[in-house]
Length: 188
Image (cartoon, rainbow, N blue to C red; front, side, top):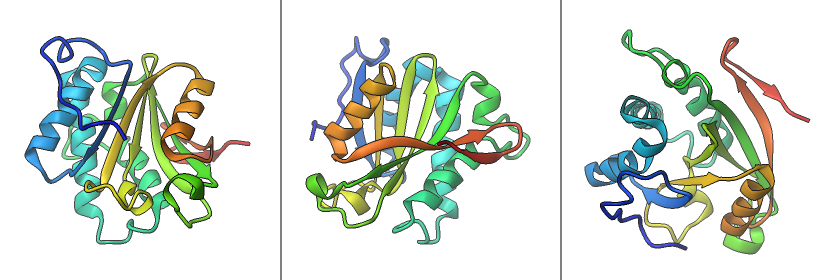
């Protein structure tokens, strides 16, 4: 696993080709590092909204997501589309983005994960893919941090390869969030 993200002054102003960061959403230092990762890609307002969405999901989580990665992943997509307190949603701020529920199977070889599949969220925007794993510590029991984000650039095959390198198994987009209907579409 890569070391925790520590940006250099140059990295703070340039987009990242590939970054991995395990974090605790309640830790203010981790929050700031997460924003530092996202700002070059999403801009200030969208990065703040992305963090706010994670915090909202964390507040709403009453322990039900621990072993239910698919529920956490899909709820995150729904919150990305929600206007809370009259504020714009993430999708209002970044309308050219797409959100997917991505499933991985056969993850036993890497982490010894025993579930039939693992679900992660994927935001695609401006040529960059942001992977959010809300239940990371459930899959990777050695991780001291419960959440993880991967930021990647490349086509779908490169993203699949990177997910395989990180988690093992086979990965595919399973559901796409429809921003107009606020429902998930099953992808075949």
